[in-house]
Image 1 (cartoon, rainbow, N blue to C red):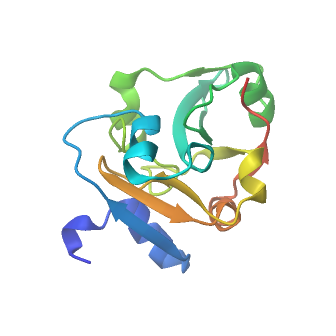
Image 2: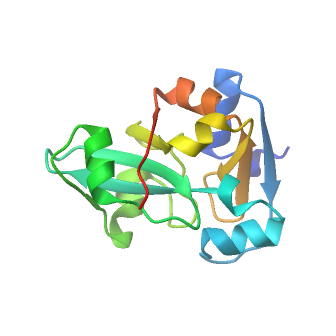
Amino acid sequence: MGKELKTNAIRFLEKCGIDYKMTVYECAEFVDGITVARKLGQPEEETFKTLVAKGRSGSYYCFLLPVAEELDLKKAAKSAGEKSVELIAVKDITEVTGYVRGGCTPIGMKKQFFTVIHETASAMEQFYISGGRIGTQIQLSPKALAASIKGVFADIIH
């Protein structure tokens, strides 16, 4: 793999010794996760998006959920131990995470945020998440990911 393809997420996985498979696809700008899953022939229920929210306390959180689902803010807040959370503005994604919209992933961010992964992933052998840039997907074990970032599994969707 050429150095130019290694994102912070890939470097993190390699440093932790986590097995992964990276897929690169043509994409010049943001497309939604459902489009990516269909383009790559990935099951939508196994393709997860990363959403970043800010809690009432001022702390940031990552929430991973299937691309076709919608985050339930009340359940998300409860899973993070907050009274409430709200999604950060698209314009703030890069400043907060170091990633761009469509390339955001819970690993290799500027700072590791508490991460909640939707509970369906805990029963999966593998799932797909962004690889840290637009046009890159990573397939890996949800349990290995959760262990490496101290993430938890919870019901966070409507």
